[in-house]
Image 1: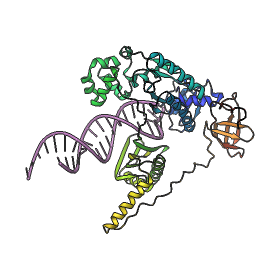
Image 2: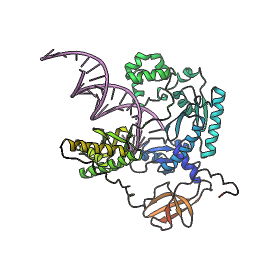
Image 3: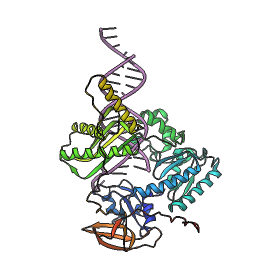
Image 4: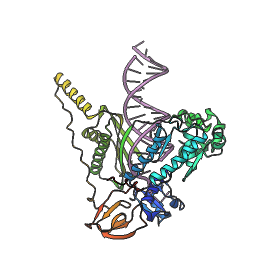
Length: 447
DNA sequence: TCTGGGGTCCTCGGGCCC
DNA sequence: TCTGGGGCCCGAGGACCC
C-alpha cells in the first residue's frame, strides 16, 4: 500500500486530500510513522523526529495513528491476496508476499501481469486506496520491484534481466543493508550491488561475517531461494513506553515496570501464549540502551511471576541520571493454554506435598484490569473520530486550553466545516471510524 | 534535530556437559 | 587426572525492517 497510514487518513477525511499529512507520535519525543507524498515534498520522511517534521512542514496536518482502522483495511487487502494464492506472507499491515505459482493464478509474464493489474483494481474498489505491485521470480526482487512501482504502479522484472538491473543500484537497495552495513561496505570500497558481485563471496564474508556476507552475496547475484511462508509463529511479545520527560524517581521507575509487565501479560494472554524468558529494556537519558533477561524454569503467563522477574531485573540496573524508555518483553514462547498451566502448577504442588515439602500453590492469578484512559475520556486525540448530537460525524482537528476543534465530514462527503467546543461538551462523544468505501446497498426486499 | 513501537535475526562470550 | 573441543543454552548487544 502506498503511504498507507497517511492515505487511509486522507481517504477518511476529505479535507486532507491533496494535502501534506503526517502520521506519528505527537508528543515531544514522537517520530513520523508515515507521511503523504505531499508532505515528502518538504523533506519529511518516516522515522524523522516529529519536531523536525513540524519545522519542515509547519502547515501539514499532524495525526496520531489509528491502528484499528488500518487493521480493518489490512484484513480486506490480505483477503484479496488470499484469493490469488494460499501462500501469502504478510510482512506488516500494508505489505505481503504472494506466491502466484502456488495459487495457480500465474505461470508466465502475461498471466502475472493480468493478476497484478486485477489485484490493483480490486484493492482500489474494496478499500478506496492505491497499492503497488512488484512481480518477479523471487521475494527480494519482488520487493525491489514494488518499491520502484510506488506510488500507484506495477513493475515486472523480466527473468534474465535481474543482474543487469541490480548492478548499478546502491547497496542500500538490498533488504538487510541499513546504515551500519552500508558504511561497512563503503569503507571496503563497495557502494553498488554490482561491486558486491565483483568482490566475491570470500570478501563479503570477511567484511560482514558469515551469515550476512553469504546472504548478501547471493542477493547481489539475484539468487534468493527463500520460500513464501504463510504462517509464522510469534517469537516474542513486548511493550515499551518512551516518556515525554526522563524519569529520575526510582520508585516511579519501579511502578512503570510493573505496569508494563501487566500490559505485556495482557497481550501474551490475548494471543494464548506463555513464555519462559522475561526481558527488561531500559533506555537511559543519553539514549544508551541495555537489556537484562531472566529465563524461568517453565513458561508462564502469570502477571505476578512476570512482574516479579521484571522487578528483579530492574534491581540490577543503574537508573541514576534518568530513563527515557522502559520496556518489558517475553520470549521463549509456548502456546500453553491456561488449563495446561494450572495442570502444571497442580502437578508441582502435588509433587511438593509428596516430597513432604511445604506445598507452594500456584501463584494467585490476579485479575488483569484494563487500564483506565488517562484523564478520563477527555483526551481528544488529533485525527480520531467523534460524533456530535447536532452536527454528526467528524474528527478531532486539535485540542487544548479546554477546547476541542472538530471538522465534520465523512469519507464520502465534501470537505466539511470546522467547529470548536468545550472539551466537556455533553453533545460530543468518541466514535468508531467509518468504512472508507460505502458498503454495497442491500438488494431490494432485504433488511 | 534529537531520535517510536513492535518485531526478527545474527554474533559473541561464558558456562556446562560429554 | 588433565586438557581440548564440540554442541548447546543463556545473556547481552547490535542491525534491520515496517
